[in-house]
Image (cartoon, rainbow over all chains, first blue to last red):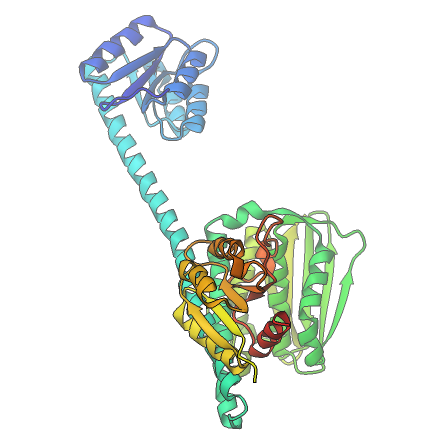
Length: 365
Length: 128
């Protein structure tokens, strides 16, 4: 059970009884509650139980060394401020322990005033640490709330507009002439674009907020390709684009999130269809070596000029000269890049104007 | 001439109600609107609709299911056909989100927005 105290709870871990008693007296004088332990094992037990704000740890002790104690304390109680007590001879190891997470050190012999000064600094440091943590938590919560907010506040009106357009079609569809119908169609197209933007943005926010991390499982590469191809088949059929797949034997799986990997493939295949003239071909090849699995998607499309290739994964970058019909969210490739990076993989593109573009997705096995 | 069939529409977005009402009226139905679950349940009693269409998420996730339970517990709503509309895409990550065995009976779940033609077809089928 945690000991309740306003002035701060301090734990002293030292095998010398005189040091423990001296420290206790000095620190109790300034109103602190002091717990003591004569060895590392007991010290760790008390620390886990009482969660002190500050721990003074003697570096040289039999059995568990001070260095190990600090290591365990900072792992078990991330908010704890550890301070090393050390003889003059072991300043080097004091510095070493600070690298391991100790905040400060107190060389022996020390006066009660020195001890209190170091403790005071320790508490100030702890306050700052707690404040930083609180602000960070607040920021994370705000980000999460913002995602929820956007998802609701942006999707809802779009959905209503779509529904109104449907209503318009239902009541006046027959009376609209070609021009009026075109206007409705254009509204619809732009809404779809905006919806895609919101969805991509949400996907990216999910990756950034770490929600994505918890959804990794073994994934079958040919399964991803099959799903991607199935999803794109109707569009490819309309555009008379052929799809060729070539998956090497004994394709190993990867660890990841199947849904997002399918989204990546669908995005790239969607792009390929936008820039490939009717009757063209898109080839998907999957290969592997000892360490990596790679999927390449090649089209016979218009290609991307060399000087523009380095920017295509940037958010909202658009290759100019595009037809309006092919307008996307501007986040698709950035989404793909982030998904690949979240899998410890990468995405690369190569292209030849007039011949076509190849995207390569690489994932660690 | 037979009387128009009555459809009750429950959704917390007034514009969505209006747009959907227009679609349903174009199909020749008389449409009643409720902007929250509570008044929706009251209207099932007072109007005795032939069909009710309710949003899945009002105020809280799954509020629509509470509304459906309440409707099913009253005489006028016990055997009435019921459509649930979801603003969440039931594909992808949410495909596993389906009413469980214990959930009250829903005749059809559709994603928002609804295509006018499909929607009217479903409504017609459910009204027999």
